[in-house]
Image 1 (tube, chains in turn orange, purple):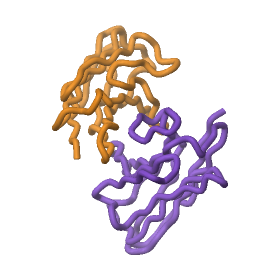
Image 2 (cartoon, rainbow over the protein chains, first blue to last red; image 1 turned 90 degrees about the horizontal axis):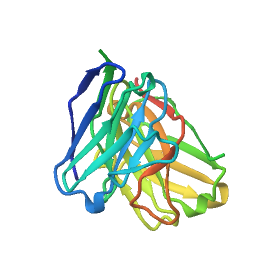
Image 3 (cartoon, rainbow over the protein chains, first blue to last red; image 1 turned 45 degrees about the vertical axis):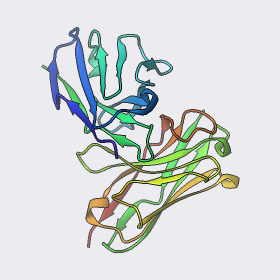
Length: 108
Length: 122
């Protein structure tokens, strides 16, 4: 099983600031089969990024993903009020799909 | 509009069974792999199980292997999760989710339902 570790656990920032979230895998993620999801309280997760760096339909370009192998990053270039949420990475390249524990981005 | 609606959750005693359902609409259900993902209260997301479009590939998390069974009925556009020998740690909101591309199993999930809650308590 590929274990995903996300850091930091909580990121306290102000609107307009840049957010950098990290996701590290215990072994290489096949073909960059890594996705990022956003979840707000009381809502289902929403797909943001797939294939490590491709934005899903309708996702603003302030969200970007990068990385390969075992190290991946989600960057939000300028935080908008609606971006304060929990972010999960997920790998889908092995027989057991796994999620990271999440990074909460909250308002400073 | 693509829609997934889960049902079947409820209160169940430890050791008992429950069957969850997910009704799909707005897309050709037969062509897509599907997954169950759960979220315990106040916790993160945990992948539970997945099934390919033709049921040829099926996977389970170690935490549920041997107790849970995923299945689908393409004629009824429905996904199921049979949960046996339920434990307190199985208590969670259970989401069903659709894989993004036809015929792919190892792919990301692009549409999620709102979930159904399973409470395990005596």
